[in-house]
Length: 390
Image 1 (tube, rainbow, N blue to C red):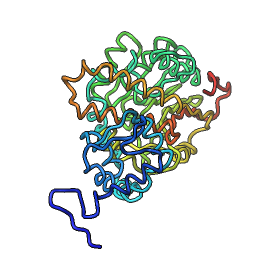
Image 2: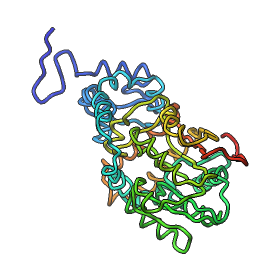
Image 3: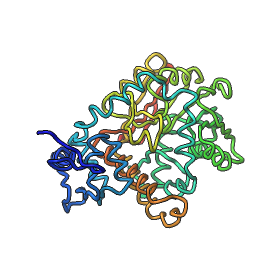
């Protein structure tokens, strides 16, 4: 039977384009369009079906931003969709171009390194100040014995610096220092000297102010500039939530650079989001709207990068803690929205809502993880300690 498209419509003879396919995929994930459960969705615009069919996750996210569909609990929706791999039906072909582009081009080159700073981290300190804890730590917290976000983020820093065995007088480097919270805490609590580096102008200004009077130096620079600007050597180096911006083509270079800046007895802690299977590209919606030129590494991609230079001392999965962290960030953002609405429009609010809750669902489904990987140059003679596995 020939299908004829009506002018200015996404309706074809025989029904809306893609509706039966999308309904079927979602039903397999126990999501019902028009259902009454928190994870069921309501479609407000019939163009939703074609957009999802043709553009996959990018179309799903953009349709949400445009108000074409709603869901009471996006985190629960994504838990089911991801667990059932319902998105695989579309992603097989909608990811062809991202895969090819990342294979051909180094999207995380030195020239592109500044893009994520300008488009994400510089979006507005007022937003991040209301969403994050008092130290402005924008990475997974550690909730094992913590009842609120401030304590959970401090516990995360204690866990990291316990593993690194920071001692007074050590020379340390924080690659991707953010708003300076970890650098300040290390200097205040452990008496170390810190060099922090970020590609965000807003973060650098905030960090400099936050660390005033402490032995902390903040650099607005790409990590590739460190051998020239601050070569060390360093007794300890850490990188918290920055490796996601390094890119597959640069893992070996990044880890070789870190090893070269460490002392012979030095150690490095890498705190990064990870995924189950190796890919060379990020989710298209996240890439376009949240973290441009980013990619989440698989364990094999990280290990192949560090094996020539490091001994792996410990690999700790804290992914269950990121679900709770993201849900708390979402709660705080929603509570503060009356104060933010004058600067950020409703489409931005829906975008941010989608980002935080889709990410929470991905961690809950165990598609994404949070790894802390402790590496040493030649093996830590004294070993290390950690505050428990979970």
